[in-house]
Image (cartoon, rainbow, N blue to C red; front, side, top):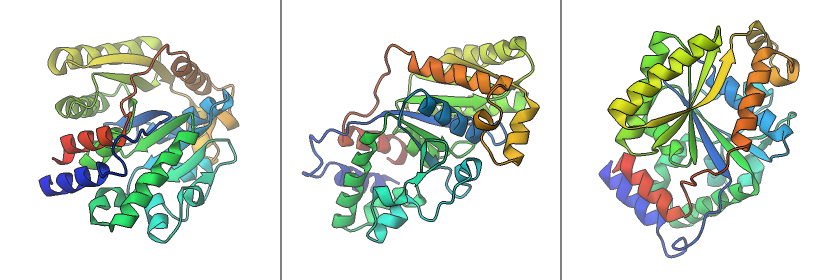
Length: 289
């Protein structure tokens, strides 16, 4: 891992990229401690609501090996970003337009083999990544659980949104994710969404339990983005392969997601994590170094 990190550092800090600013959109990394808590469904429906508020939104599917954002959006993905770049393609060719507004980009596992590419390919990839600046918001849908791969994608984020449910196992797994975020010093604050709550009381209790533990043992500050109430129409929309906020816009869960989108847009300021490619490289080293 140390050798890989050293090579990545050399790539990212080449003369062509030094002092070159990567003007990014606001990037949200959506993570969860386990599967089945509604992470991907939340990511897609949040993206649609942000698009409806006039933002140009890209969803990056970073769930390597288990990609399913395209299923929720009802679109076909033929190639991921790095596969296309290997074959002479470019960013625009692998971005899929969805019928609901947000664009979709499959990240691809080859991000983690950047150091093995030839020099020209490396520079091409770094140049193509800069095209992200045309978007207002990028939502990274990570794989469930925690790994060095998902952490590496999270490095790209300005904000981390952790999805959990009130179930004790989900809370425990969510805490494990927070522990890794703290260990690698990725963020001092994390946003929390408690999904599938029966009432506000259970949502409050789940958040407070997680927040108190994270603050005491990890020195992490948690911010509640809100709750999503259990709603039978969530599962119905999944079975019907149409996003919840489109199929059932008046559903309680749809209103919850709309409120969360409005909260994100109304924030006074966001701490931008990445202002240059070199800073991105330094954060990569925290995980692979």
